[in-house]
Image (cartoon, rainbow, N blue to C red):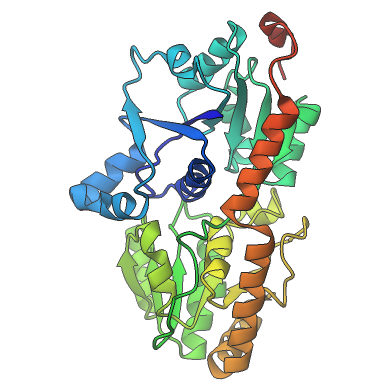
Length: 376
């Protein structure tokens, strides 16, 4: 099968967490013998920021860690989407693409494209900025891939019905795995971007203050930290390490006793049940994880066994002290979390799910023009 994927960027993971998952799924599909073509705009903001901050050397981890993947950059004007999709069996368009590209793929499908076309949503904009998502012309699309049930429910309310499929993110276990040999582990690590200030209070309450109270050194990796954010880190004695290539995260996890999950506020309030991809990746690397509250309403994990959950800052401090002092507890969390990932949440599992969705959709069973009548 030939699969075409339009991403914001495959080459850059600078403030672009979706690249982690897509890289893993695409190379899993390639390993199974499928033909994969990935496209990204030449002016992608993630890549532009990566190159501005780190130059061409910032691409080295991507090039080294994913030799089987290539990405084709295109200019918006004059790019022939229909020609690119002409011989594809399945085309997937990520939601962080230009509306013109999204619409062009739909037109290619309606004008007789023999492929199935899916829109892939891995963000909270459907609830935080619904007008931005509803501005997309999805009239020619066969379905939506939503990275959680609560997001899928939004699309069902918009009229997609059974044409929306839940497709969670997962860990690329070719890259994210425990170290081959254990070395000295010290302190805590948190890998995450500052974002738009929507979890400043949570970061202070569930990460910075508890780490300081527990007497554990804290390393923080990420981008978009404003001056006030960096000042907050300094106030608590946290060490800001800057951008970390996602491909380098396993070796960073391997040097630390534990890590912390602090979900963005939208995934606690409006889209419960959707963890960040860092949960999957950390557990796959065998590092104990302690999480701020979030509702695992889809039963992806077993909280309390796969990871610990802190209901408030005081409980987070107690959990951190317990994990630092108890080697058996650390080993139990490592074993249970990794077992759950390997059993249910790898990119191989998600490739299976995608292929099953493609088989369910099959080849077009209606005249392409009738798709225009199914506008959500």
